[in-house]
Length: 140
Image (cartoon, rainbow, N blue to C red; front, side, top):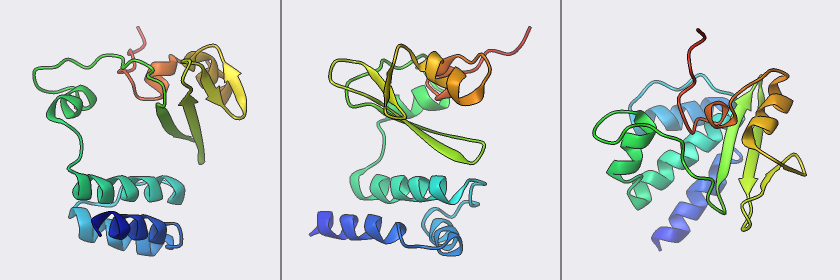
């Protein structure tokens, strides 16, 4: 029964307007609505709904992502099935890692996340930093 309600709640998001998503976000989280595109707001709201229904991330994972606590932030391994989502200049980019560890974006297989990041931005980026897997280094 809980799974059916969760599925229904997630399906509803696909048909909500920006205003409806923002209202639902504020009501659900009690936090200000992030300044994101509608597509990214849909993903963020979907995550919040699922986290509340299923318990969210483990303490260790939260520390790794937030960079606080006992576990230092570090690059996360590219595990099979990993799905990375990044918004860049109003467009959402989704990278997936297949069972063999190959990186896929935009219908093609890529050698590295950095290669994908450079193609998306047109500049030299660390792929793990671009996709939020490790902190960006400040320019020297």
